Image 1 (cartoon, chains in turn red, brown):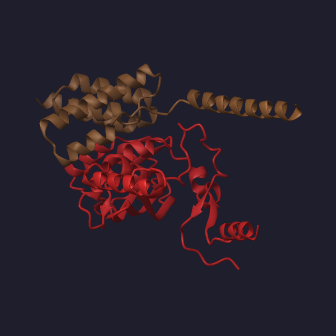
Image 2: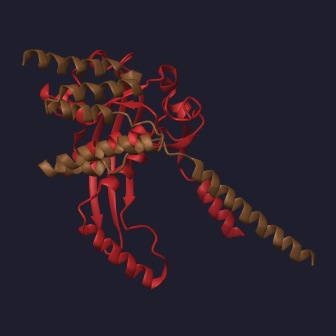
Amino acid sequence: MLGMIFISCAIGCAPTTMATKGSEFPLMYEEAPTTILILPPINQSTAADAKEYYATTIQEVLSFWGYYIFPYEVTADIFRIEGIYDAELVTDVPLTKFREFFGADAVLFTTIKKWDLSYMVLAASLTVSIDAQLKSTISDQILWNYNGTVVVDLSGGNTGGGIAGLIVKAIVTSVQSAMVDYVPHSQTANYRALSSLPFGKYHPQYMTDQSIQFVDQTPEKAPE
Amino acid sequence: MKKRTFCILFILTYVLLFTFGCATRATQKPMYYWGDYSGSLYKIHKDPNKKNIAEHQVQLETIIKQSEERDLRVPPGVYGELGYIYALKNNSKEAVKLFEMEKQTYPESTIFIDNMIQQVQKREINE
């Protein structure tokens, strides 16, 4: 019983701040953007592949939030023709330009800070740290942002307990480290990073998700 | 005896709840069908050879076909991306047709799509 109390206290007293979509991102509900333009990411990680993994998985993942997403392959090609290779070069472009040419209500800027694979004997994980900002092309304001780290377990799910389970897990891990396909894991990382983004007009919960809670990762002063 | 009846009722409730839970889950339609879009796109980025490029185009066509069969809205950008592939192959007719489909499915893409159609037609006049 004492243990139970201790556990519930440990959970209850954990220093995580819960925030709601409505309280954190009120501008999303005020401006109600319907179209999002994804800009090529800035890759500050040591993994050369990180940009490709992000670029090839973000369109599909973001679409499930219910916004109109411009075809990344097409818009990235247009940027390439215009000599813009990553978001660093567009920071000087006035956001209204994206509204004029594409009809974009909002633009997604992403910086990949970290994209690390780590393999141990019994576990493998992918750590992705990104800074993402959704900026309005109408008001120039930041509508939504995310700064955080996502750790994706690559060990292949639960294989059961005991020594036998550990051995199976070790085999699964080594088999998976031989694979080069991290597309599904990048998708998982993107899904988690976007979790606090309010839903758009094609989502059934559009304009009704204000009270959905998420763990606030933005550093704030400790509550008294 | 009473205990047994209770036990049976308990199990029955569980079975019912389980069946109901599964049934509601099964009727929940996904928003979009994307097939292996991200996978085939990544292959092009890694190695843009003819085979990978052709496979990605097939993937886009499959997404459109499967979405129609499943009565789902074609995901945003798919008609547009396929239209762009045709535009690069100088098949303006097919490109414009697909661009129009994107606009019809997502009216908020109008500014972008009209710009794309204009580019394709401008090139046609110049040739």
